[in-house]
Image 1 (cartoon, rainbow over the protein chains, first blue to last red):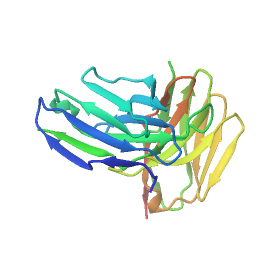
Image 2: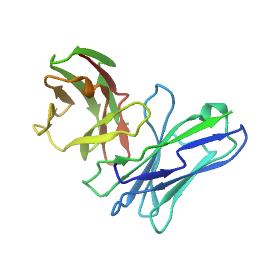
Image 3: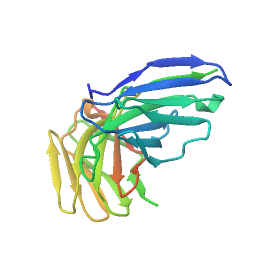
Image 4: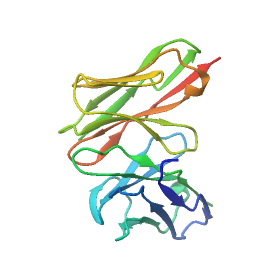
Length: 114
Length: 108
């Protein structure tokens, strides 16, 4: 158990809908990262937050947005969903800073868009 | 742009047959190179962090080493339970970059 929690575990929805994925980082971690992993593909970095502020951005679609709240939990919002958005979405957290960047991953949310 | 290339894509070993996985990288201002293990359908599990060339870390049958251009994950006398995808990642001045992984299968 990494200490990172993600909800929900599974999500099934229809094209065009909007969903919100939630992540709670490990106690003491200030950085939160979001990744997308499609079937048999690598981890695609989406976005990173550090202590509430956006730190880095990857290949995140305009239909996707995220935020980190004052209690450090984070939410990833996916809108106008398409079939191709079906994937595992992972959240990870780290202490942050110049060192201490090893990331601890949550169990993921499996999103299925029908 | 930071890049990470892992080889081979897949590796099949017999139980007890030692081997190495390679991670080649280019990064602007290395702040850390990381190895993770990922089982199917699960989140990656952190294994090691390496910060500078010449550094080595060990854990059970795994040993990670680092040079200025690549890292190796050596697996000594592997067991079937070592079967997984092994991911390498680098942290530069900006975001972290993951490789596509090496899928290791260890046959009994």
